[in-house]
Image 1 (tube, rainbow over the protein chains, first blue to last red):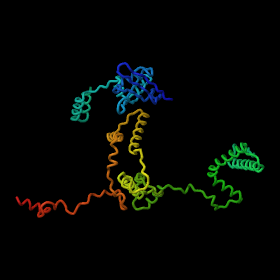
Image 2 (cartoon, rainbow over the protein chains, first blue to last red):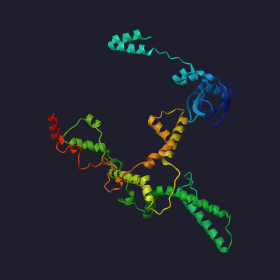
Image 3 (cartoon, rainbow over the protein chains, first blue to last red):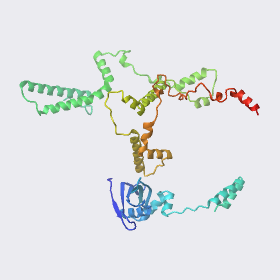
Image 4 (cartoon, rainbow over the protein chains, first blue to last red):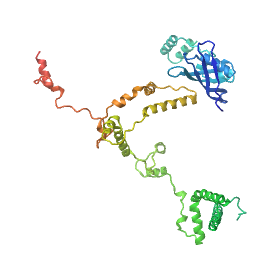
Length: 144
Length: 272
């Protein structure tokens, strides 16, 4: 594979433009995705949010935005340039199977229900008082 | 060309003979040409010579590996008879090779304390055949040498010796520590991009990386002070560094001359 340096100029919302470039492009057939290193050049501007980068990448690679996952963006010292990674899946099903849960939550594809912290701690303290089968009963009773 | 119809391919020695013959023939041809005063430039025999030479050089390592066998067969062919205690006939007897654990087991039986089979299998006996390399002495010398080199190359000593040497003063532009930091950072970058993962850099490493890029790194190098201990003959790098020598007068005897140490303190108490 030869490196394909695609870049797109953004201009709509921000005052100054930002350029998105991809490097080290690799098609990962085993995980049904394309992975790459993303360079964003944004002089006179704060770090570009991931959602914008996602949209730009989707347009570059002619897919929808929901199969594009970008992460790990670090801005170089002095600003103006950030580097991160991006994965573009073939289909949303593959994405849901392979991506780690926290990234799916970020994208909004998965919802993790968590009871309140205080309630969890109270439940633990109640279980401490019981022993054996009584403990198991209590656990089943208090579990949502 | 002799061709062995029974075997497939060309035997190594046969190849060697033939390439030697071509080499000799072509060499003689070229020599004759030169004697007659003719030019040997761009002659095809030179190519053949080169080819034969290459073949011979490639054969040599293979022949070295077969040397023992070839010598043996040559000797047998020359003598005609194979003697019983011929030195070339001696090979290792595989049956005589006994594992070390068997030896130890025999000793176990003869000894007074008798352990069960289970215990014998559990305990791991180190085989006493090979010698382990001991480099304790070399390490100590190494540490000493290193410490010595470090003090000699420190900027403090270098400046001091600069006035006594006649060599021209060399000014280097590369900062070793900085280069090392740059190299480390680049390595990290390459790793991260290769594996699409952000490595967690500990606070100390992060501080070190940031420090190297600032201009304040030269301070400690220039203004640091090195003791001359490493240059002494009896320097022991593993021993703790000698503390500052205490002067004759100890702190206890300070203050009023009369009441010194424990007794003095007691006497002072009674004064109230």
